[in-house]
Image (tube, rainbow, N blue to C red; front, side, top):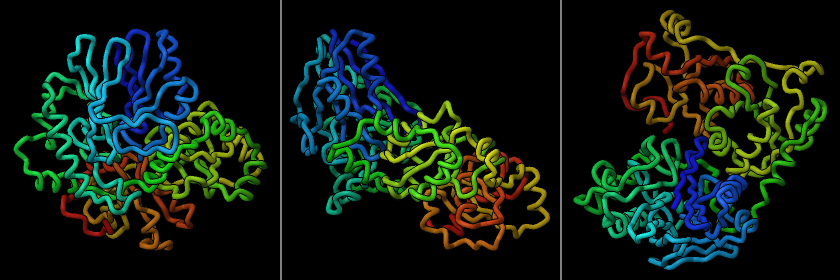
Length: 473
């Protein structure tokens, strides 16, 4: 028996490869399926099952394409109603994979169809559970996402189902059973996930707040629902794509998105297609020189989730400014969250753009030390802390306004285009995204503080841990 976790850091998502005696199962595959096929081919195995733990909200699954290319059977948990051929398993149903078995446990709570897959080894001993978004390391899946698609399914109702699922299906299992979750820290599918991506169930029984046996049902529901913020706006659209099917092959998306465009053709497409220009280069490269009106969302961080958070329309045509050896990566990562309408990239990059006489812009930046000196002279300058409200509450610069990047589109009118703003986040990535959006919207006096709060907190500037004073969240 072979079990491999295939972890994708950008999405904080874990897919799994299970193999026994020449047969393999893939759990929760990403959009690009060739790596799973290659893995099976190297081992001389046939992919028999594609096991979906639920209809995902945070990424577009590759289950349909993988099934089409391999003949594998797609399996969902009870109550699922996919718009394509799939096996909807019964609670307790056992699937044979080589010399091991996989038992389907219906564990509703995160969604109605959520399933946990219990892997039993060659001797029939319970070996591991693949919990999807039912149970994370240190947390459980949020029960408020279904309401975005089905308004009558309330978070309180799902939280109650989750309570029952954990106590009736998960807690009775032995302590040595390995927990393989669907996500790790950084995913918006939970709120307090550990940076660890696997653990024993016994340890989780001791440290995970959601698995404490003495917790009353009402207290559990309150704890699970407390502190949830609005999910990224693209989540419901990804759910519908995964439920309805008809998802284009990723190869088609790549072919269209990796078209090389001269600066003239790039400018023409920008105007004619009403495209959005996303610059995926490094923070340093973008701040130094960028195309006016373009938005920075760099590949070196959580690129796809931030596109999904900030770009409301999944059908928005997108033009890319990217290092040429990373163009395909950008297109693939866009496709993972359902943005299939990249229409090309700037051939030759910014250098070619400037050579052809097109204008450029830059972002003013200050080091934390220089900003501290400026702040000490003028304590009335406008500082925007673009971190999440929970980060801001933990500790923030005295007098800074909390203006989370997550909700910038809804609160842009709270800022004055004639004022100067100094921006920071935790490390510099989100503040530069914010700066690029503000510049594109006509804000002229924007300064990014390099290094973010990590460097600001060491300058001696006054800090506070008061509740959010100037935020709309």
